[in-house]
Length: 622
Image (tube, rainbow, N blue to C red; front, side):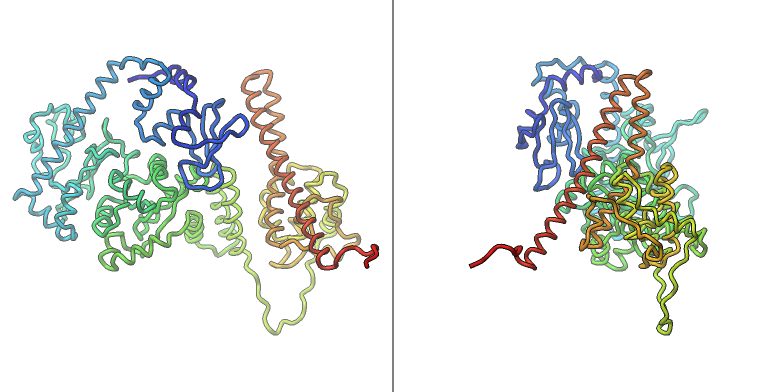
């Protein structure tokens, strides 16, 4: 059934989103919108908003987002067409008549489902027949009992090229070819795709057979060890996960989803009691498959083989996940012992060993760091610079700005600790080392760095970096880009970066050797410059100030560009300008929050002093 975008827009316009959501979720009015605790994840503070004006809901906690149709499919579990029909009845709209071509395609798909089920029945019967003795022996050797064989639908494809055609003669040859069961070659008779193989059915989310996987049984065969069905009207390997129809319900009980490399690993895990496992089908984990997994759990656990191929597969999955990362959604990675796959581990070390590994997975960030650090020798400065560049390249692929900033900070901190380790002095070296010597030009620029600036944010950041020089190293790339584009403040930032490169970890900038110490900005609003603040808190707030400093010129440039587009694209320019003005307002709010923290810190300090010294004197007491 073909539904035009215009018809769907009319349907959305006629149905009030909040009234539909209210049927199952308690909403509270919040200005022109509604808010609630998110129905898609557990939370105590409402982060779920509903906007009738914009026609969508959004959760700032888990990222759930959609319109009224998406609500019906995701929250109610309806299919797209069932959701559309229910909403159309409510809105008094008539669903367009089915497209004859679409109806024909649906009928053809239904016929292909019949073909696939008939093929599955035939494969299973072959396994039980005398001709399936070798396949049964293989299954016994793998330790699969009769219940596992039956549950997963193992079968056997005989070696004859025309065996299936005779067994499924109730179906046309064209249907067998379209289902991927037979191969049509020019100038030759079609022949069976699967021959002399142990067979496994592949199901869709509803448990219907849509494809097959086959393992060769002849040890000396030159044929591929594993062979899957090709893409068909029923089967898209990039959108399908093996065993999802069983693992999905199990994951809702366990709160976990395990991803392994192949279907034999899935079956070995299930036989050992791990029912919540799935596998991609002959490809690296795709973006569609990652999104499928995130519908089940927030952090699926990748458990790939401990060999080099398994580690490459894990890294490919990480690379595909990076642009998709969103709050509370990531991947965890289990590192199996070298040379072992899940089946090997279970047979050699038992279920307990697997449980322990699954209970202590590495994060995506930890895996990224470990893999890149071990990827190449790191003997020279050039090698280490290459490591830093590879890490930054990975980070730049993350689209979510907050997650990208956090990954960059964490990875660069790890890099700095690795590349610039603290140098321990020997017990006999009691003499204090001389302070680092700066060039006269650097000293002059450093001495004037925090003075003369009318920009409170710039002056505060400069003063903060001189107070915590290690932060300058950590943010050196961002600060370097800012300095290159800012003629007024750039020389001061460059001077600080040049100075801190000469320091040992833990040393301070040698500003005390200059005439006229660097002064902090007047009437500062920034808590990280206050006395008595916890150093870790100060560093975190300084990092936020650096982020604001770097973001501001980019935001101003984007606003100028949007304004310049008004003559050629007024509608698009206006929309872009409104989006950027909203970002600018958020920027000012973040800046104001820093002032609020400064005021709160000052009030707390005054209160502490009052308690320590008592009330002010001057009033007579009895």
